[in-house]
Length: 180
Length: 180
DNA sequence: AATCTCATGTAAGCTGTTACATGATTTA
DNA sequence: TAAATCATGTAACAGCTTACATGAGATT
Image (cartoon, rainbow over all chains, first blue to last red; front, side, top):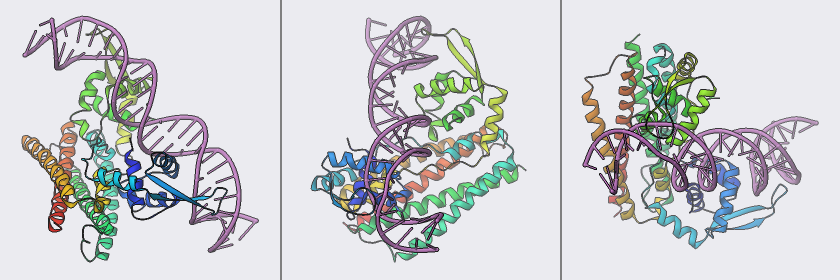
């Protein structure tokens, strides 16, 4: 019954105990590159995971009106996460607004479309440069079994994705330039 | 106020009048590669577009209990769509279950992870072969201004995406093979 | 004195999925 | 005669976003 968000939370908790607030920070960056959630969603999901016995917490009095809750994985939670990792991902439908716009681009002025793609290209190139800097910080792939293997492998995916997107944007810009 | 789904419907209607049923078929393939919706969502969205004056319809008596409704774009609908095309896409958060699993893969057995990636690779290669066949059917890019430019450009994106994914899967399989 | 970070929660609303409901025409 | 295709709709639910609500401690 656990949703994908639930597993995303378990995946973060597998690296160490955290408060809901900490998990929300992780869901902005670095996990946010492939799964995001706001704090409201995280707190409600944590309550479900708790009810299911997949996580537990210890209350520590911190700032604010309520006690802060430091969550950790239970044995059940770890087992369930490990199981989930190798289950085939259910492919959810692709939804890509830029590609949809491209599908209808023939209706618009080529110059305006080109400008939009130039902006997209700049964004992809900026992210690519950032990822390349991050990759350089690793001396190479960490061994499988090390949690950092996960960080490196997902970074590799991001790197490859940004290159593909940038390349496609450049192709589009060329096409649009030819037609002007 | 129009949602992205609304624009997806307008984009389909820009190529010719269609019933809700026809639009649903388009949303499975070929538009389904970058935007999908079930028929129930399409019928309710068409009612909103109608209320907003972006589409109109003519009732024709067809099979089934109700008349079939052949929808078309109004002048307002065309103008709104043309405007939307060059507005910068609002980037929605990435949500990629396979990459999330990769992030937590260090917990699982390398052999099981490798099998999962091998399955993913096979799926990407199959899609790639299909897209390559479709690309061959075009003699090259149609001119901008032709609706088929949209089809070709989105196909190009799909081709590039599948290559990137397949490459990343192969890299993962290599990493996992080394650790066995 | 004002703002930022830490910290947890509820509620309303939108988007998207799945199931329910109906029924004629065409094809196997 | 059984199934697939054509055709439109409603209802219930799950997932996600945005806004509301509170408040201590640290920094500017």
